[in-house]
Image 1 (cartoon, helix red, strand yellow):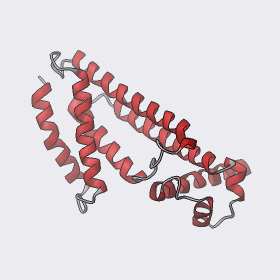
Image 2 (cartoon, one colour):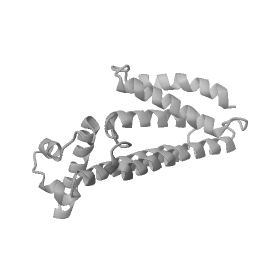
Image 3 (tube, one colour):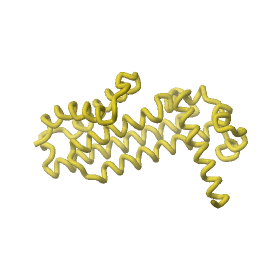
Image 4 (tube, rainbow, N blue to C red):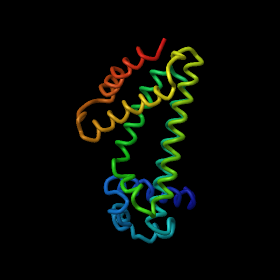
Length: 199
């Protein structure tokens, strides 16, 4: 393995560990010593690669941003029926946000230093929402969704189910449920939407 490749792996390990700890403790409560200690290294490499805690947090956000965009793009590219798309995207978003933890963005809208990250986070959410809306329009063109339905309403219904599922996962209401059982719950909820909007 080349020195450059080895260095890239070390940087990625730092970013992943930062995501993990920021997700547990939040930005404000996390220190660089927490992250360095978890990796068994000094803080030197963090300062060298990221300058400070904000630089590391920004890299952690960019990792999250790329992960979300790539995963969402893969789901969109499968071009499934709108209901199957909704199931996949709801499960994927809930699984990712559970994996990344509830505190990764804690304080993002109140800590002045994080306002640039908040703007990037808002843009990510806006872009992902628009992709869902575009998918609904394409589904209308294919005849999967009634043209009399407001596309925004369908996109918003995706978020209603997603937020309910996410809250259930974060409060441990669904502890012990397998992926298939969670997907079955999503399908039950989507059956009402399918009757409402699909031909």
